[in-house]
Image (cartoon, rainbow, N blue to C red):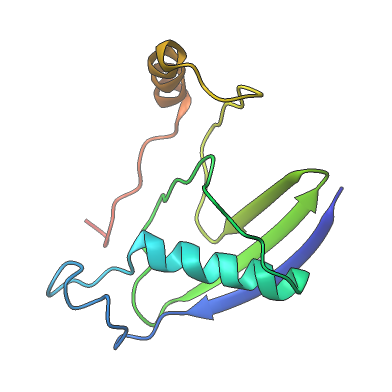
Amino acid sequence: MGEKHQTHFVIAADHPSLPGHFPGTPVVPGVVVLDHVLQASERWQGRSLGSRGLKQVKFHSPLLPDQRADVSLEIDGSTLTVETGWRHGPARDSGSRWEAAAVGPALRALLAEAPPPEPVYGT
């Protein structure tokens, strides 16, 4: 078991990214969520993490303006895990960079294992 840290954030309804991100039904853009998670990670570690990319990101439900996002960060060896209030599905780790020919079969297998999607906005 690794070192853990819990925090939260809220994206205010007047955030400048929201007017154009689905006018009339604003949703916090994923890049804004990821920026806040990275900032929380850097505050926790007390240093810049210098992120150059993310191996896998999947959003299972939208974050709405003024909605609290609870974040759990964990470092276990060389792996940083981020859990939010959003449920996550099955995953595959190739152990190295994915070969293009392997992505399709792996994606089909993951989709077959994944739980059915939940309705968004109660629809």
